[in-house]
Image (cartoon, rainbow, N blue to C red; front, side):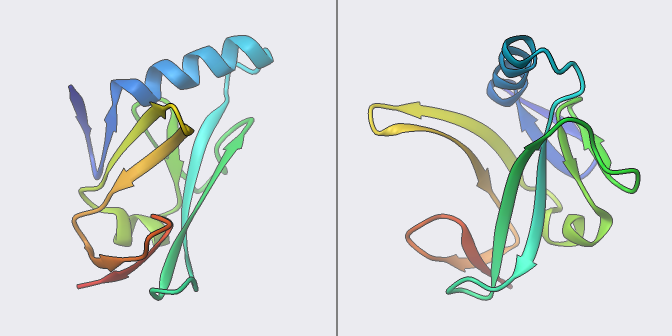
Length: 111
């Protein structure tokens, strides 16, 4: 089930994974910070990092995903989830603003 919070939808899988990482690392304020940068093979790319706390200008969604206002323009309505497969595990973004992307899933272009 996806939780609707302001502009970014945070899946429970993200909240559960962040809760586990917070306990494992002993960092109660740990968040997944998502920033959209220019570059990549499609024009824009996601930069996802785990950080001890959000930046002062960040908005926090679902208590565990942070992003700055400039990136939120590109992420409005996006869904963030955590996926575990035999090949590995990763945080993923489904972005309705992306008109195309590349095979790596990190780079995209906007409509």
